[in-house]
Length: 107
Image (cartoon, rainbow, N blue to C red; front, side):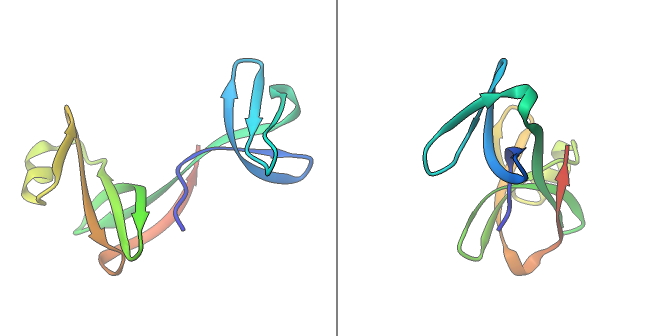
């Protein structure tokens, strides 16, 4: 499973989270809103390499991963057959078996 988004540690437990100014929403079975000062808030993303280039994982479906190219070179992204999702942002689907070095990066 790949993760991409905000997480918070609250009372020793990690939750998906959403910062909102002085508060943080914790996605528990019942939505919990706590003071930002009461949690350790961080962002996690999953990074990897595909066909020798750097990517982050932005989604997954079965054995397929939705990858976003982070190399910053449009000609390489185009050569890889990626679609331009937004101006200068290239994404594509790749088989999980072809992706190497999957690891979480905490920001």
